[in-house]
Length: 459
Image (tube, rainbow, N blue to C red; front, side, top):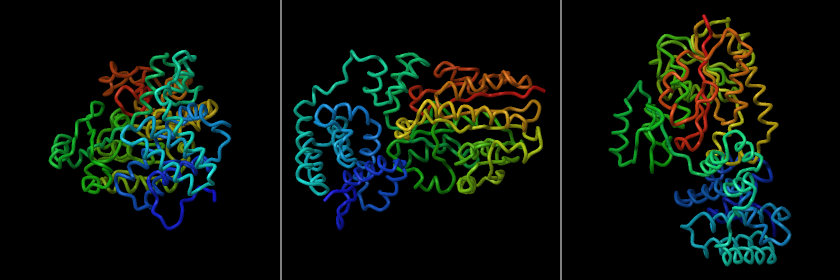
């Protein structure tokens, strides 16, 4: 018997569930988070087992090329020639042996052999057993050589495509490129944004701590709290009642940079899923109007659900291509505009590890061209003296400071805001100032990589 489906009649073990997901991700090119969430909902795993399955899926994907580099030393015909499910099984097993100290080695090996027996023939289980036992005998020797060329060494030591390591070395220098790649392999923090229309951050901190949660004020955002050991915060009463939203600390800076005031008319060009829209509404004390646009109809529903949960009434959602917004609204009709532009997403790799393996330099060039068109479209809708905030969740200069520089070179009616970083000036020493905007790298605050620039339309 062979295949990737689990044997009928038995509840999936965490390793079997992880194997199913990893095999499907490779064969179908599907998103690991969507497949994993669907698989966990169907399985009857304990919280600990669900945690292990999650760790195995994301960890294996995150460390993909490092695992293959070592496995190639033990698999006679090479990892690439194995059946996808066998390759996935060896990868997730080696991940446990190399990166998970709390998993007994014998448990990882015996479970892998049992899975191989159930899914394949005796030859496959024998090969899996042989490979993993050889790994254990030579485990102390499994190291990436220091003598490799820098980009290859960084790519293998921290599991990134070599072209990406090389690109970041050119853009940021070798030491910073290595720090970016290392940070991308660390688990993301759980951070929540406080809805200050309902409760202050201090009061929310006190509330969380009174329930024996470890909660600290964000070092990055005055509206953020970092929570440890709280599990899925979206399942809490605080979330349901609208007191908090789940949002990365870097992302919380965007609404602050827009600095919308009560009574203003604000446009959010690419608004889904609505976190920044809602934050702006909170900063405006729910007074004024925010038009939240997204190209996808189903994502408009997400925005509406978000603002309803938070008790906010000043947001109107619309659906359409942001490139066509200038045909829907009068010129110069908004006081503030946020263009949180579609981007390569290279700042959020730690949350979406598949992302680094699916991108190419051509993808970056294509999205950068779109961003420039979106900037020009948004510019027409801003009133004289108004503020346009451009943001991305990437660390790619072509999508960030170079996009801003190209825009300003074309537009004599725009300039960097006279107060440059505005309320984000406090980050000047800890992050990078690039092209008049702030570039946050993943290692700066253990948060997402983000770029934010503030542009003024000259009166």
